[in-house]
Image (cartoon, rainbow, N blue to C red; front, side):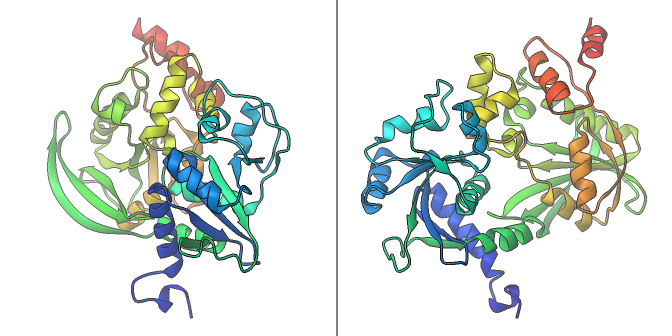
Length: 371
């Protein structure tokens, strides 16, 4: 019997993932196991307080450690392919930010050891919860009951349940919405994924879903889309993408809840602070322990499939996005660049995307065109 059929209320693996994410965001411990007898109890530093950390340390009897991703370990001057475990016996809560995410990083303490699969699983739960990937954990011996009252999840749950949930979206509402400079559109709201987030497809004009459909996949950017931040060109790309869809005779803009390249608004603001001090966007995210791009496109694939779209003309400067869509079964026929205005404030950001993230941007040509 499949896991989905064993419960009338959904896939048990996905449900356990949902509960684990909610508990971690609330600052309470989660226990993860590898189905081989190994278990790890952990909390996220991002959602912890001095009091909750002290309680965890007391229950862990001083055997707890801080797990840092391989990216953050490199910031501290250490090559740790699978991340690093730093023993925390006697270490106070106030010392952890310097190790975990502050730019003024301290050297890696002596006595660290390599991370394992359970640590990577804990980081994945934090990613699903839009928390920084700095975890405080303690390994549990067989028969250890200290954390039995906490939410339980397994590596298999993360692989099967979360992956299935990432592609399980349901169309819940549709409505016509007139937009300035674009005219009448239709907003289609899809709900699904871990934490049941709402994602929006904006259908411009009357595209033929049986043909090649122009599509713009746009990750939400509160600062750029809504407030007109000059640090990026997201707002420009959003509006120009909609106008381009109209010029092409119709298409779809998928507006995905993926703030901060999938890291969340809080992490994005931390990264913005580092960018203000001179770091580019990739190095700023590395300070926080993130990889180059934490976004996932399962929701985009599910929405396109839900609308009956299988072949697209992708409006994007990002070839990686096209590759991920192709890998998920969407036939990306071609990519059409969509650029925004270049400013003094966002030039460094755009050069970083072109030179280090492979985006199809000719920044010098954009500067020349703007003069």
